[in-house]
Image (cartoon, rainbow, N blue to C red; front, side, top):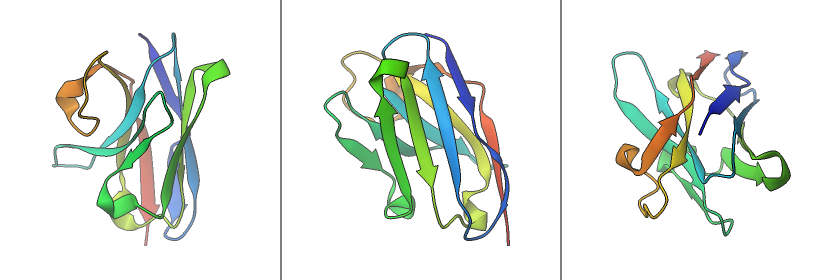
Length: 119
């Protein structure tokens, strides 16, 4: 599976961004992020049945959705904070893996898109 992520950029605190990730074939996709000097952190994922999963720190601010016809997942990020600054990666979950928040559940990764939130 090839993944193409886009939509990152530089914004001020309180502003919004929408990330997109297009897969080369239908896949269950999730978003992770990695801030400088830190490990890769789960952000959000969406299951085939539409169930969504979020890390606590983004609940109420971020929203994940999908367009199955385009094999694309979106991450709408509102009320951005400086601590959201990171490289955001989309990833395709391994078939049968049930733990959406674990890095080990994903087999394929996109190239990453940088989100910078200034205070």
